[in-house]
Image (cartoon, rainbow, N blue to C red):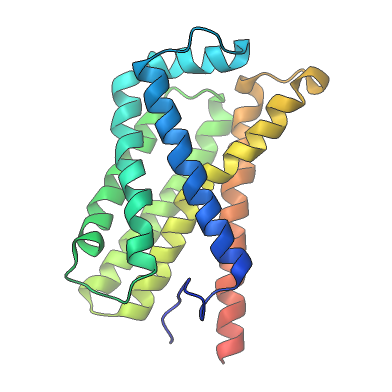
Length: 214
């Protein structure tokens, strides 16, 4: 089995662009949330102000989740786009960091904006993320770089689904005057759509790649 890669010779341009777009969105979302917690906006649209208030009421847990998630997203390219270097700090840090992000995601879902629809998406995709991460770590321990990298790429693709939910939420916010849907009604739907897109697109690519390499 060859080692899957997002480098130019391993992945198409659209996939690499999607990865960097998701990374940029994820970083922007976390930075915006940190600033909103530190300096609550004085004037914001009612729906956005309500969301800011919701996360402010869970500030400690929110920060415990999003700051490690930000570090995970920032070091992911160092693991993906560099030649395997098992002793380097990004490769060593990404597993415990990802585990912490996953565990705090469960805690965040206890009191979620979108109720059980959002909670079910988090439980499903977060469990899939932790499963993929644990499989990657298992293959790392077994000194099996191809399988380690494959499952690590899966876990990163799933985690970046949180970035894909943001444009979906943007569509719901933009059309709320027509649909009359509140965030509590569309957040869960956006989570299912965003995470599904990332998971299915990556899985389709890696399986297509496997068929071409046979």
